[in-house]
Amino acid sequence: MKLIIAVVQDQDSNTLLKALTENNFRVTKLATTGGFLKSGNTTFMIGTEDIRVEKVLDIIKQNGRKRDQLVTPVSPMGGNADSYVPYPVEVEVGGATVFVMPVEKFHQF
Image (tube, rainbow, N blue to C red; front, side, top):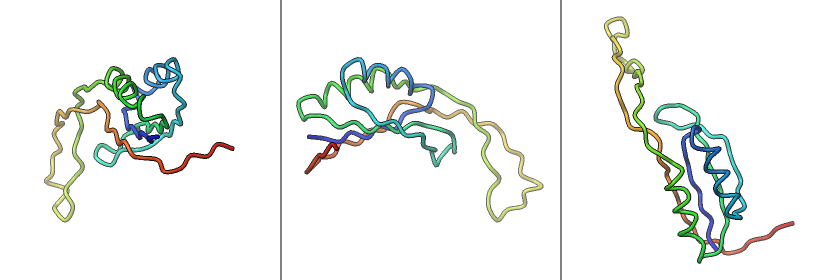
């Protein structure tokens, strides 16, 4: 058995949740916040048998897309904030960060 932890952008969370449940995967959905952009994302915890891991990864790959987003950087620490003029920077966001871990025991009460 494996535990799959997938972090996706909020915009992709509903379609991913629907696709996972349609394929009979049990999913726990957590609202989380990313550290880099300090924006909302969603973390899914999925427990599944070893033989179904690739199916989960395919579903995540199909439903978590990358996109470009303009962000305005925060002022640098320790510098003079009066002379700092933030310009928007385009960064790639989205996709999914996925961890697959072995599960020693599983209990359902």
